[in-house]
Length: 240
Image 1 (tube, rainbow, N blue to C red):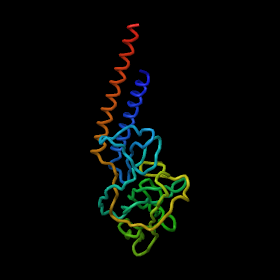
Image 2 (image 1 turned 60 degrees about the vertical axis):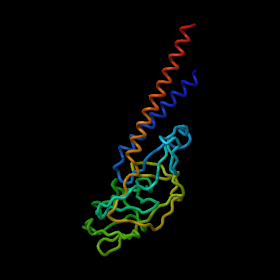
Image 3 (image 1 turned 135 degrees about the vertical axis):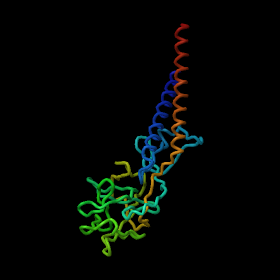
Image 4 (image 1 turned 180 degrees about the vertical axis):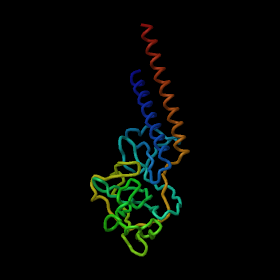
């Protein structure tokens, strides 16, 4: 009976974790560039999705949870400092302890004239941080499909796409930020960029709501199993 009770307890723990993951996905569904989380193969490999097969994806894994790096839908905003990457790769930011990577291309101009991320981190181009002349407004910024950034008629740099050797090397350090332990494993290349567009989160609300429902049912089923085992053990004790 004890193995059965341990299995039921584990099933409850897994269902609770699934609930937390799906709830987090839903909480970030409106955050541009956010990558959804899901159970990785391994610790939770016995947990099945509603279709009856394990979910699989290429992505980094932390604490048994994987990150799904599939591209999200893009939305036209018309804002000059909104940029989306067409295809794989990441924007590169200068973090406090090294380079950071993101798919969130909602940029702005700082008081110092740097183009920065929503977190206030400098956006890096082919020659370092992208900086515009003093007094440049966002309306004067033009970014062509190859990533060349212009302030009026002056080119101030060119965006690059960062490509890690493997997305498994990426470790999440913020809602849309990732780092790697060894920056030499990340290469940069020219990319295809779309100005006035934002890549949205790759969370699908309907799927996450289904996952929440399934997790709740799994939890309840495991709870009933544990209660039945406990009652059976108590009855056996009473008989003795």
